[in-house]
Image (cartoon, rainbow, N blue to C red; front, top):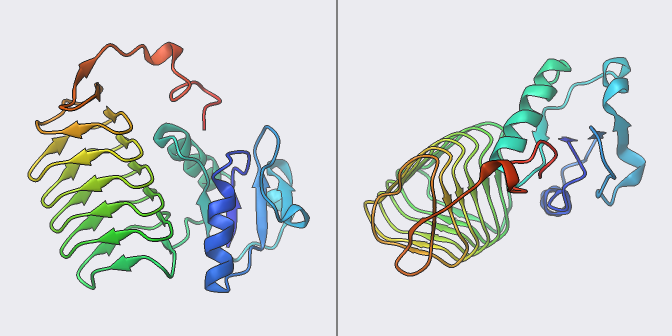
Length: 216
């Protein structure tokens, strides 16, 4: 396994899942910033990737959807191939679930039947995804979030830690559901909602660390 973009603190979660699976990390590609990976002997600078004999697929390591999508594009430009999903052995995934390449499903996650998880998705610790749900590409779900049945989350959206989304809700592309929110109504794309019940709040993307060029 190749871990790509290793300055985000969440890279250690990818490492732990690889360890639990007995999966060797062949390379940890440093794009910029200070590497946070524990396996320091695996660090390779992006400029040196082309000189390596690469066989393993890669995963982009970042929580922010836009940053993860950017890292996936950079990895492909460097000649790497997106790896199959990395699924922690403690996760409970229904046999009818489809999971796209480049996705990371962390420890304790539960995903209900007939759900579809796109490419480059991140579902963090102990999150619960109900049956017949769809998470499109590059969605991020924070620790302990609960998505009830028949939820549709658009590409690049982010669900904060501990948020609760009630059944049959649609979350638009690139929307943000703040941590701890309870969502009872559909959420439009490119909006931020927070609170219980969750309501739309002002959001300045240019000033937010979630969408800064170097955000993770």
